[in-house]
Length: 123
Image (cartoon, rainbow, N blue to C red; front, side):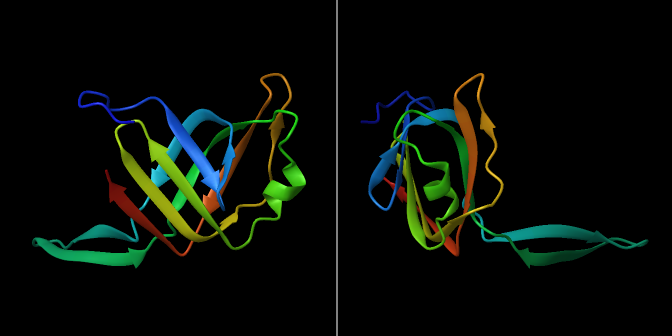
């Protein structure tokens, strides 16, 4: 539950309704476009707009129930991240970016989900 002054910290991650053990370092990129300014020799002419693939990435604990093979096989899922401040991001038609690397010392795996679109919900 969000509190009025909390801006970060606790979060939860779900893939198709199954909660994963969120370790940390999560980043959400809900944007669908990237704009790059174009400067001429006389003035700024405007910008170039290009599509961006929405993304959610972070570290998961590799506890006894996390299957790397299952994680790597995700190709059309719904990924939901609920932040401590009450914001929720839902990544639709999501897949995992290949190449999971397991950090055996710290017991975690870095995962990146990309999808067709990402919606933001405010509680």
